[in-house]
Length: 93
Image (cartoon, rainbow, N blue to C red; front, side, top):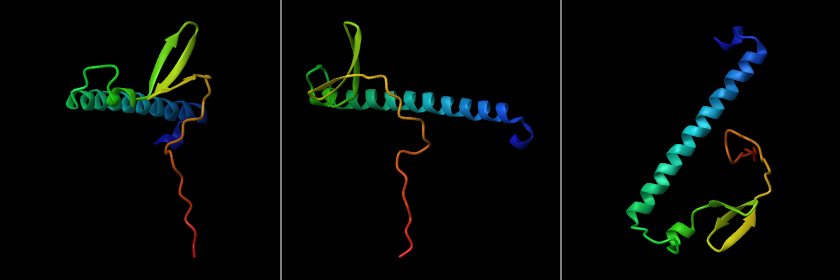
């Protein structure tokens, strides 16, 4: 069906699908993380289960990324949007 749509519309359609997928996955992941924290009865911001989560904080004029005891200034880099995080190369032996 997409083969009859002009190229720019096809690309826009694919990008929209990717954007919806990413938002949907983020919402699902957030819900799962919150449920996990509730199940583990996390009640303090010093609990390891909370500290082990990747967190973004706004401090002064910068955004920082925190996890456990690490704090790094966010550099606004974009690493790309790939459909999978790992690519396996199959070698014929």
